[in-house]
Length: 637
Ligand code: GAL
Image (tube, rainbow, N blue to C red):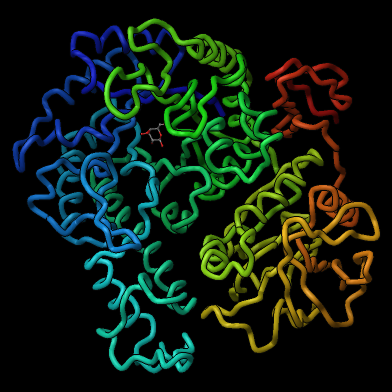
């Protein structure tokens, strides 16, 4: 595959006289793609029905004439102010019942049918105009669904939609009462019209009620997106893309991805380290100018799965951002390293965000490839270097993985709803496993929860899966490789009740979880071998062979045949060892990495990335890597 670079550009922010010069400089830098349009509704339609596409025609023409390929964004994340006069009830409502007002972006409720119709209208107009334009080579729907906590809305539109959704799912109201266990606390309903949204209750609402509301809300994101993809498909052959975010789990990305051709995500390594990482302060300080060594790769692997093999970075951090608690500048070399790490994970394209730093409005403190005065920001030269390297590189392949992790959005909602511990977080659990695998130098594939075929993998990890579905249950039964299951997997049925057969709800595993406890973060249980388990501990019975126990004699790792059950949350030391042992049983060779160094096998190359701010000797590679350095070697054999 020939990989490419691009940039996000806002022609409406700059004098028209500057566009051609900007386009020429993008081409000189070695960029192929330019994304435009996604926030420009107020310029496309300043007042209802007053359509002004002439400027956008000229922008597309100018960029295209320079040799750039345009990604056209639909502008539905930023409805103009007049939209509220037409649809005063289209705003999302937060859990406290307060409307989320105009004055920034994403001020809409996914359930609002009137706003969906407005989106259908503008997307139809755009695609009729640009669907066959030779310069428009891809489309992006909306922008970052769910960003700024916008998936859940407690609006009247959501309430109405939720009741219909429930009636479709359960039919007779008694089925819903039974599924939710509404006999508890006299919560029984007689009609769907009696059911409210699960906010503002006196104490916690019924978890089954909440989980269904989370499912409903996720479905609305997919339905909202589908309104656009159906229109786009009728008018264009170009691939359809959405730009997802990091650590955003409120909707099922696999469901949205099913209607698109390519998944993309917006990668802000330094912003995410400060803003949404569970790491401690020492770790954040050590990687503050480089980003967490595993966060980017995790999302690359996740979105490769969401895109069914095809994925991009739509926005790559270029320098300090404006939105994290602290916004340091990246170490020189990181913009290059991040891009190469993406390509090594199969990215087709990496687009930097944004071309020129805007001197106005919310993101004026956010770097671009150019400074506000048009001078080059430090990242421009790195982007040009990557472009040069890509031009000289042979085709880049992605690597097959021996190991897979099942990733399930519904489980994230379930444990959010009923964490049973202040520290039980699905992403955190999965990420701990992922980091452990990366520290062992392994490639990882991420799989959706309805994966039917596990046969490509020697080792499959299924931690924290709320409930089995029939497809995955059958795939697991047929799998000849090793599976590592738990903690907490199969501990619920699809209604969020405890399964009658008891967790982990797998008849041939020889493990029954009879009791669970969550542990204070300062009270880990030491294992007989090195390391400890922390945060979560299950008590198990059954015939499975005990491989590991705590120093107090509590079994934590059991084996029956090709299945392992892990009844606790290992700390990093125990995680590395347990995963290393599992890899050995599965016949997978590991390559333990120095701290902060990561490896990726891709085609006939092995890449090494040094996320440290200091040089590191990499024995595997037989050389030192400078800070923010990367190197690749040929695979042997
Ligand atoms: C992304 C968003 C962009 C811009 C960027 C700033 O989340 O899609 O529009 O706001 O963040 O870092």
